[in-house]
Length: 246
Ligand SMILES: Cc1cc2nc3c(=O)[nH]c(=O)nc-3n(C[C@H](O)[C@H](O)[C@H](O)COP(=O)(O)O)c2cc1C
Image 1: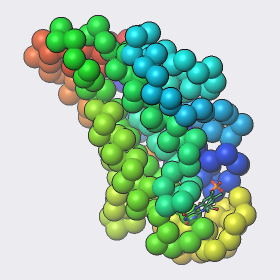
Image 2 (image 1 turned 45 degrees about the vertical axis):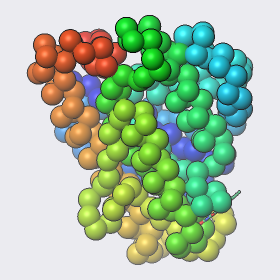
Image 3 (image 1 turned 60 degrees about the vertical axis):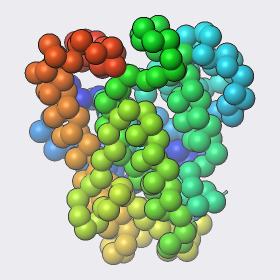
């Protein structure tokens, strides 16, 4: 059973978010215990306009009125079993461009699944994706937990399952800081020097991706096993159709 992982670096630069993401993805690629297909997506160089609340997506099968990089990432997001976000802390939360993506994703999905439910009400199917979050900022106690909580809330809203790494390195996700350095390669350099905090952030990122893959495998097998009961409920149809193709 193949597990499709989409690793998303939410930074507009090639920097510390990408470093932690790559560490986590490389770790599971080298474990060889699950059949993983890994794709990395970079916000760097991409354009994500903000949601205008215009309602176009609700009437047009989830298609957004903006013409930018949203549709491309939405399509990859929909296909993945595991989503790993690695984002820098911006103003105690995620960068605006990532928030723009998740605002639009959430709203557009109501349009995407409009015809799935007889009630005609705005509801979402059980997407059952496993979502893990990594973050880092320049300082300590400067927004990492808030950022992780925002991404956990996003996972729940997307009818998906947030995962963490192992204790004690990972409480609600993976987090780190760049020891008061603004450079894009601060973590990579500190890691090479054996810096303790950076090592903890790397280990947390590695275990987070590993646990996410395991959880996705457990969920996919469970969905297959209980298909007969679940298929009666429209909420499960998209995810059951998706695993049928895997
Ligand atoms: C607009 C902006 C806001 C930021 N806000 C915070 C913050 O609230 N807390 C923090 O620890 N770091 C903050 N930072 C610093 C970045 O999180 C930090 O430099 C991080 O390493 C950048 O990640 P990257 O190298 O992946 O781009 C901010 C940086 C920018 C550009």
